Amino acid sequence: MSENGTPITSASSDDDDGASKGPFGVEISGLDLELDGRHLLRNVNLSIEPGKVTGLAGESGSGKSLTSYSILQLYPEGSVVSGSVMFRGRNLLALGRREINAVRGRQIAFIFQDPSSSFHPMISIKGQMTDHMRYHLHLSRRQAEARALDLLTRVQIPNPREALSKYPHQFSGGQLQRIAIASALACRPEIIIADEPTTALDVTVQAGILRLLRGLCDDLGLTILLVTHDLGVMSALADNVAVMREGEIIEYGTRRQIITHPRHPYTKSLIDALPMNVGRIHD
Ligand SMILES: Nc1ncnc2c1ncn2[C@@H]1O[C@H](COP(=O)(O)OP(=O)(O)O)[C@@H](O)[C@H]1O
Ligand SMILES: [Mg+2]
Image 1 (cartoon, rainbow, N blue to C red):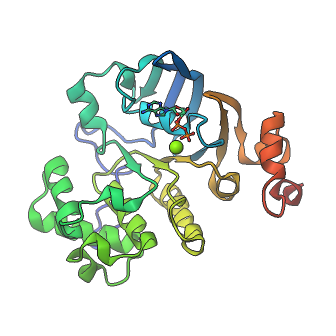
Image 2 (tube, rainbow, N blue to C red; image 1 turned 90 degrees about the horizontal axis):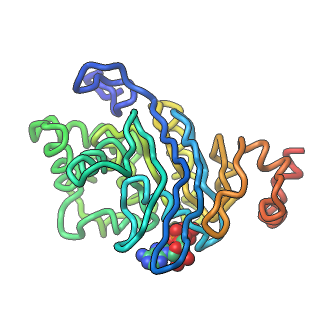
């Protein structure tokens, strides 16, 4: 909750049409993607359960980013795509440009690997956070600033008021990723897609960012898709885990199932490669 009692994110707030809100999930079915004769995604089926963290793991190049960007039709030009991505009763793959733009950033927000790519270098944090909210949520300048301040406090930025007038380069990578998370929350999304959100960060700050994401899911009822090549990250955070390989989901289950009883030899090899062998610890 913010100081004036309004919820910081959407999951429990009033909808524009007055309907009761989620949490909402996303259901990917039979997603296929071909590009220049390469079959990059093959019959991808994935339930991103409402109010939970779903982890999408797998080695580099296995199709994790393609799958997550496809949710918002952000595939490479020339892609031939089939299948469906159901969200709130609509197939996102079938939406026109205007309709999908209304979903992007507003109902489904992204957090990227490199936090500096989420910001314009020459515009203050306040400018970037409030423009977004004023446009999408029709807030006044003062309302948007108050909300930006609440959000920076929520993601534990020290001296949030001062932080608002600073520029992206004045923050460390970890702090900037927290601000990127605050910005992603700005328009009360229902779903957050985080693509390798800690990969570019110092090891010492990674755990803090992951705990923050977990807390947002638990406290605000957000649904999160966490993409990572690192099964260790996943085992610390996700409720459910899907493992991709060569454009296919080869395994899906609860975190516990995947870590203690992986069925696929490839998943087993990933678990065995984990530091301290998390799988055995859980057994
Ligand atoms: N814009 C693109 N143009 C051509 N090939 C691409 C493009 N984006 C991804 N690919 C290919 O699709 C496959 C999956 O990529 P990606 O989803 O980025 O993998 P991951 O995120 O798991 O590392 C890779 O073989 C990659 O080379
Ligand atoms: Mg990727």
